[in-house]
Image 1 (cartoon, rainbow over the protein chains, first blue to last red):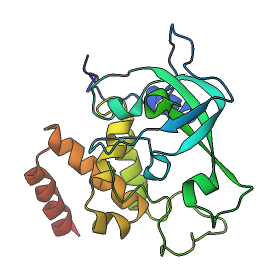
Image 2: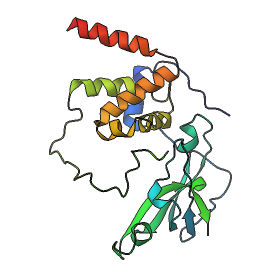
Image 3: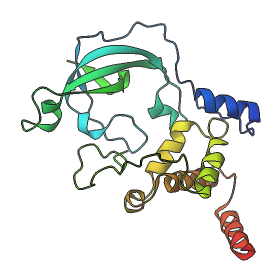
Image 4: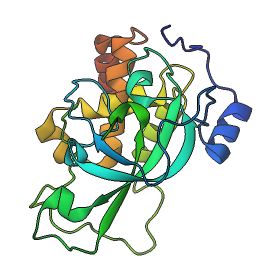
Amino acid sequence: MAIETSNECMTVAQAQYLLQNGVDCRSVSDDPPRFQAGDRVRAKVIHPITYTRLPRYVRGKMGTIAKVNGVYVFPDTVGQRLATKPQYVYSVRFAVQELWGPDASPRDCLYIDLFDDHLDAT
Amino acid sequence: MNGPHDMGGMHGMGPIPIEPDEPVFHSEWEAKVFAMSFATFCNFFPVDETRHASERMPPGDYLSSAYYERWLYALELLITEHNLVTPAEIEQRIAELAQGE
């Protein structure tokens, strides 16, 4: 279902609350997370012309689930007003040599929060 | 989208300038752009729609614009795309303000 906005002007109290607390993007899911810490995953290769939180430098790369962060609304569809599509977000660890090649440090890793829709099981 | 915002791995951008005691806003217009944009967050535009709007700025403009210039671009794009304000009304107001100075 498409996302409707209220199109009502914000009150001072609402503005103060938002400034202090930010927008709460957490949500809930009846399903357990598809991945657990330690699982190997591959970031999808996609090139949508619409909004996405999946940066180019991890697309197609293999990583490891470091942590299950919880369930959040999906910015990729919220950005198009399509649906909130709540889903699990994971902290995914990539060896920097997987991202940048053999000239990168063999000891360094990059952690990035990715949504379930961004990941494939391997 | 594969826009100019997705800069991970790009070369040649130079060091990130670090300002000691950086102010929240560098000039009054930045505070006004923040206030106008903030007033539309959630109530008129989902916040990710505003993020995507700034990414739709032409890449050359995006890379040579300041942070709140991108916010202003996004705000003008969305309020006109959703027919809250017409581009002609924006131009008219700019002309009025220019005359008043």
